Image (cartoon, rainbow, N blue to C red; front, side, top):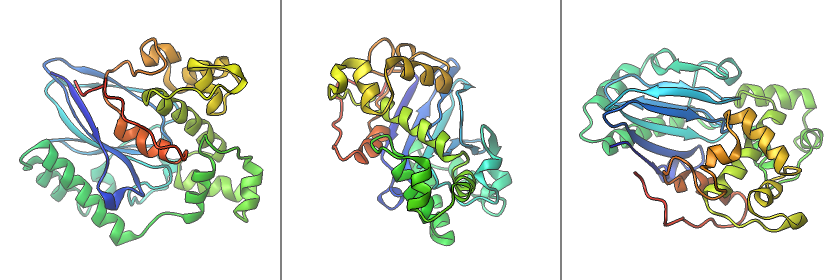
Length: 283
């Protein structure tokens, strides 16, 4: 039976990691649609080799073989693991981590293959990441401030943000492309859609701005002009309409997986504590 379970990361990684997960396919291959999140991801099939999924600007469809177990890590924008390349070189790409972590990759692959359970493997991967971050230090603090300002709950003008950070618009764009992989405007659009998706997955109720409720209300709450604006962006970022993506409703993900550990840290930046939807359980 196919299963997918997201979890909050180790406390020491909360500042850089949004969520971690374990995915197991059943007797059939599983078609996975990866969406832009603003951050990068590590996908590590147990018994295989890890891959870095660079910053996405559109959907990426992957067919995962039967009877495969993958542990994964999704990073916040601008907090990629230590790499020998800038992220603007990795946009919309999958790169073998053995090419990026030459000094430690073989040892990590061996220890993951020998892990007693997927949970042990996920813990081992997080422990390795914690060691890497402690060894190399944190990311660009100005980009961290920029990411917070570009969250969908903020009303931020890109030029005004550059002035606030004491940077020129070109400096902000260059540093954001290096640390995040995309320009501030592209990141803002991606985070706005992630905000809508997080509200929908959390089963949030629209605030009623402009008299709109349901999916249209959630769209307006995160900064879209209207539901048509949301639909255009959803099609561009995911290849699907909002109703196709969410399975026909504004409060349930079509895949049936519990995404609490992913939307919780995202909605926490909104200043409203999200609640866990009890009707969704891992399958």
